[in-house]
Length: 342
Ligand SMILES: Nc1ncnc2c1ncn2[C@@H]1O[C@H](COP(=O)(O)OP(=O)(O)OP(=O)(O)O)[C@@H](O)[C@H]1O
Ligand SMILES: [Mg+2]
Image (cartoon, rainbow, N blue to C red; front, side, top):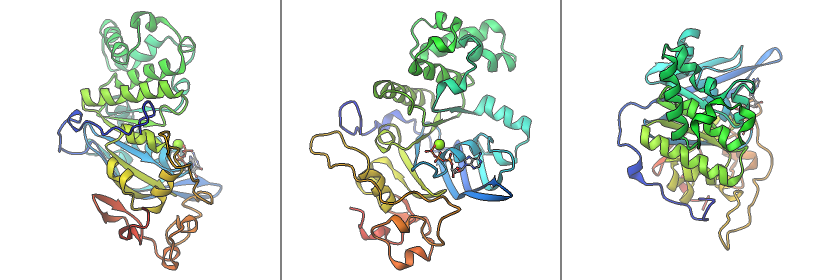
């Protein structure tokens, strides 16, 4: 749903470059366990996810479901002591098997990350120009060429007076403008993939809409793949071609955005949609999902959502549902074909 006009716009399919080549990101059967006292707590289990060049893919779910851990695994940024299984391939190469220097190369050239709080991504004492050009200079680009490129990038992300901006420090920018600078830095090396982890959560709604539009335009113009993390389904609808829904460290549903909104097959997806406030006249009042989210470590042997699900059968808390095809996508629910979520 577009927050600006209350209408969910269908995305222009022609804006996405037709490219059925190899996905820029392939996550296969990813499991992550993180240190927790003396044990390791399971955080992700059997996560499969694809992003093709020029495609915008959403990852949604409640707080603690594992979205940020999944993102960090794409850049090889998991905490020390993390144990992983499965594969995370960027442009065909397995990130989980990379050495430190290979990871540095991956982050410098192939994948860029945009975080929720732009101020956490920049050094407050350094000028924006230095921040934007450091990667290019480290890669051997002459200073004058790097400066020209930084100007070009600031212009591309809609910073007025790019030359002046190069000399300023982060505190002289508003949050929205600084997020544009961070996005410009993310684009500097022309990465094949941008991972944006709640990039607009810290911004007001108007600035949020501008940043979202900027990401969509850059993706369409440059063919960059985008993995867009949000807990806001309306935002996912405006930004993403396809959406993955995560609950307790597992993907429970994935499909094209329009079908996900029109006909969710997993009761968790339906619950997320029902608790999203609609702003159009006559929209039903939001209904929160009862109970609280569980972590993968606490999840019962069957479906992790069973205890909160109004449609659960005894079988649901005993037998883990597999992620299988239903409609144009996949859902992990024993009742996915019964139309119970409508
Ligand atoms: N460094 C860490 N060490 C131990 N556990 C962690 C660490 N980082 C995350 N976790 C745990 O992993 C789980 C998933 O966290 P994650 O940050 O990926 O959730 P999220 O879906 O991004 O949530 P949010 O919407 O709040 O950002 C949580 O239970 C969290 O406590
Ligand atoms: Mg997070």
